[in-house]
Structures are given as structure tokens and as C-alpha cells.
Length: 383
Image (cartoon, rainbow, N blue to C red; front, top):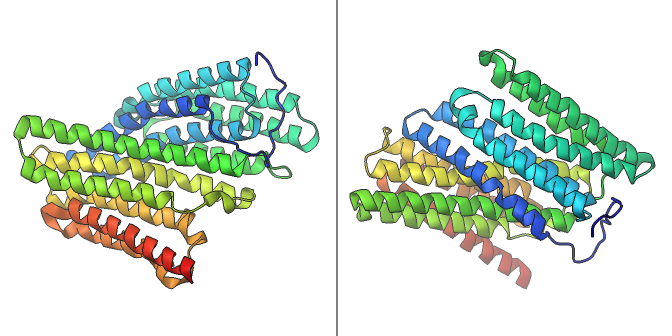
């Protein structure tokens, strides 16, 4: 449609699914995720894990929050007319500008380009919330206006961050990030925007697939480059096989439960949505870790075997633990089912000390976690 009044969509709408525009929007984040992962690989391979993890967290927060802002608004107010599509295009431009500034933010703590990208995104998103407010009344209108005001205030904070002393930027970053996280809680007090549970769960699942797909792509490129240059097939096959098992198990475990049945209100949805920062970040970091393991295997990484192993096992264990905490535990019955993923996460972490075959062992343990979980679920169903 050329134009449609922006009114709230129904939470009970049947057959609600992600739109082609939403899928296209998600794909535009691949560049930013790849940039963040590449900088993490470099930092870990050079023996700077603390700086690498901190820098990765900061730039990934920007990626995740931009996606969050768009996704939840679209779930409630997507009318898919021409103005909506143009506003989404503007947000895509902002995402690409942010991606272009990832390396500077990571390496030099220079957030100028990243903040410019966010300004572009926020101009479009603020206009969307104002348009939603124009089509609402009462508490719904007030909530939309609160969102618009919150975006403007927080964006002013990001711009102000550019003028802060370099040694205080990251501490102030945490302050502004906390303010960002407060906006939905404050805006929706007294009125919940009509996000659609099934649609939201599907959107998060699709972004998880993109993150894990980026991991596969990064690991494939790393293995190919190593084989082309060193022909170290015997060293690389265990890493490639273990990495594939980890990622496939991660996909299986994430999609094992009907999460939309649990999300009935903001009380469940907001912590679940926010917790995905660690699921997305750890999922993407698995690919970076596999790249580091490959570089170590061919003698390019200036780190120990233990550190190279940890680059894979730590994010893999974190992914398993967070999926259990946010997803699985709400649907598991009995101690055996509840303990499967936490114990598996600890076992994967223990593989850090398994020497050159750590990634392979971690992959086998992740596959075993899937097999055990499936067996226990089938037994419960039969009973």
C-alpha cells in the first residue's frame, strides 16, 4: 500500500510471520557482526583477551540494540506501507554506517562513525514512534510518545559521549547503555505495546540463525586460508569437525522448545529479550574462537594452546548456559532434564584443558547434550 494509517496490530493475529523486509533488515547486520568478530579474532590471537572481550561487548551491544529497537516496534506497528519501508531503508543506512565504524570503536575507542550511524537510525525510528502516537489515543499514545522522547534523550547522551575524555568514554558508555535499557520499561509502564509473541520468537530465532551462520562462514574462511597456505589438514580437520558440531548443536538446542508459549507479558518478555544479548554475542564469538584455534594450529596466533582452546569453549559454554536460563528451563521437567544443559556447559568448559583436540571434544559433548536432552524428552512424552 502507498499509505496506511499506523495502528497497533493485534496480539492474537493468526499466522503472523516475519516479512521479507524484516529478513532483509536482518541481513544488513551481517557486516557489523563480521566486523566485530574480526576485531575479536585479532585481539585474542595477539594475546589481548581482556581488551578484546571488552571491545567486542561494547560494539556488539550497539549491533544488538539497534536490531532490538527495530524488531519490537515492527512487531507492534508494522503497516508495510511506503513511508514505513522508506523509514526502514533509512535505518538500514544507519546500520551500515555503524558497521563502518566498528573497527575504529574497537581499536581506538573512537565512536564518531558509530554514533553518526545511530543518529541516522534514530531519526527514522523516532519518526516511526511519532507516527504511531498520531494513530493512537490515551495510554497507547502516551507510551509511543515516551518511546520517542527516550530515543531523543538517549541519542543526545551518545552524541555527548563523543566529547568526553577518552579514559572515561567506556564508563560513560555503560551509563548511557543503562539508560537505553530503561526506556522500554518506563515507556510501557501502564500500557504494553501489542508485540506478537509468536512473531517475536520467530524474529529472535532468525537472528540466531544469522549469528550462527556467520560463525560457520568465518570458520570456513579460516580453515580454507590455513589449508591453502600450510596444508595442515591433520591439525585442522578436528577443529573444523568440532566447530561444526558445536554450531549445529547450538542451533538444535535453541529451537527445541516452543518459546512463544512462555512470553505472555512484558514481565517475561523484557528479561528474555535483553538476555539475548549474551546468546547472540556468544554465538557469534564461537566463530571468532574457531578462527583463533585455526590460527594457533598453523602457528599464526601468539598465544598458548590453553588460550586458543578457551576462545572456543568459553563462548560455547556461555551459549549453552544462557539458552538453558532463558529458554529450556521453562519447559524441562525433573532434575535430569534441568541439569542437562548446565552440566554440558561445565563439561564443554573443562575441554579447555584437553590440548589440541579441545574443539573436537567440545563438539562431541555438545552433540551428546542434544542426544541426552532428546532422549529424556521422549521418555517424558511416553510417560
